Image 1: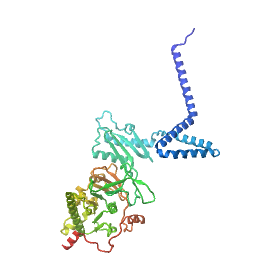
Image 2: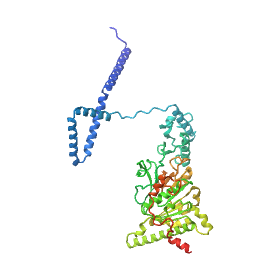
Image 3: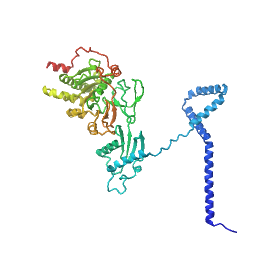
Length: 521
């Protein structure tokens, strides 16, 4: 009897086993194709049943009876309608098929040739920053593989929209200058004209780059839904804050994330400093703050150093103590504000010692708004008078306890002329208009996590409250309603927020106590 060689028998058996497996796989695939609609409908029925059970569990017990009656009524009506049961079964199957569909997201395809070239270019540009000669296994090297350095990426209209960058552990990611150089390089290589957000993960040695959507510039001044002591400085990215405000003015009703500045006795940032380039919107922000302060029942004193009449619309309004544009008026108003702060402190101290509640006249917030105070320094020195900023020492130092809030706005190139008291006690800060990363860092005390743009709309900038993070900011449009260049919609939005006049516009307002003393002198 002839015997087959053992290797041949093994090979023949292996081939038969492989063929059997292939046939079984083909049969399974065919069965899956046939049963796929049935599987989808079954999965959908299961999901609908789970949703019904959750709905029944969430329904209060006192409402379950009416719900059962409603369901029974619907079933009865469907049963009595001609072809009703058939249509009900078809509708149920369609709903189950829709709910049971495969929701697995499609696997993204790899980058095309142009995207691969762009990623390789980014990789080569980062080699001088992330490579050293002593590294035995460098992650970055000329002609190296970019796939290890960029584990995740997305493209938007042919340009990089999101990118995750791995870098060696020895890179000095704690050095602001080193990080800034890498951010500037990525901004130039990923595409200019857009704003990028950078997230540094020092523990994981990763850098995430993402393109930010432009902030809305169509938000007008309006009554914001805020509590007393809360002031909306502007609006920022939805990922930066956990609060939204509904907009009540305009055609499109939506919720937007605000940057809210809190003032009062428990505030850690009781005073505000706003710096920006000419035409960047610093006066717009001060005007917005004034309108919000008047709405919450505060008294405001406006001191304008530009003498451009930006706040003429507030003259004679309820709650507006004075709008001063000259050196004498500014000195008189600020001297009265310092005396008022001292008076409030004395009355509050006497009330606490006597065990009484604070007097009513000390509870009303007092706002001191100064626009370009450095413009008074030279005229005051020429006339032999003190700098008006020297009178802010008491309101700035003791204003939180006395219910006095100081807002100072000036130009970036005049920041050196601000007094030490202003720079020391203004912990809430805003930078508006085009500014370099160094200028933003010098004012806010921390660099922004985004790249500043050269061309920005009015009211666009950065804000930081105390030691918090740096936020992108867009100030709501609050123009001067008396300006001829203001549109009708913006003019009406501001005029609707102005309180009624208590003094005619052509009448002489009553002088403040300190102003009368200066006049007598």
